[in-house]
Image (cartoon, rainbow, N blue to C red; front, side, top):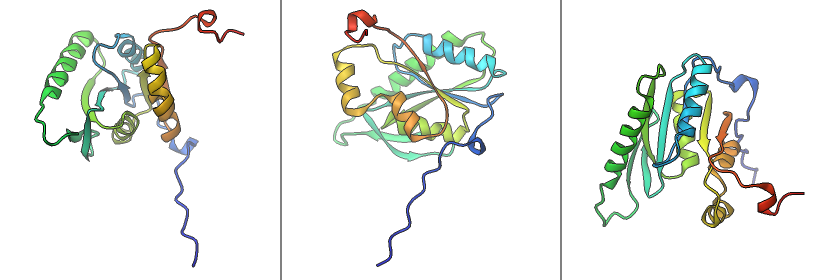
Length: 184
């Protein structure tokens, strides 16, 4: 029996590079996150000739039913027996926050409410809008974060391993090297 052909995953290369000037930037955000991620993306957008910003929140308590060509998704609740439309409140709250924080700024922006795996959802959006880069923030340090990242890996690291665009990681909290026990 002949071997099945190997699936070739497209690799980063100069031919796959999206020009930075004017190309969109995908920005992964979460509710109540410090505005440093938003402001970093805005600064990057301005440096790139006021590139459009696509802010996205990925709700991991929902799953993607269908990925749409514009980078948005149809999504549903994980438990089909429970009716919970609280995602609409989160969507509205994030949109209001973005509108207030970006009021008077020259950059164009849109918001997408996504669902499922953050890495997959942000990659889908970046492909759909042909983004030049993806901007994400770090988690605040702590035992819960370390446990989550031990089992699942950080979103930033997963993004760098599963798509070809540059990933800009914005530190939201730092730990003193000496206090963390990793100083050498």
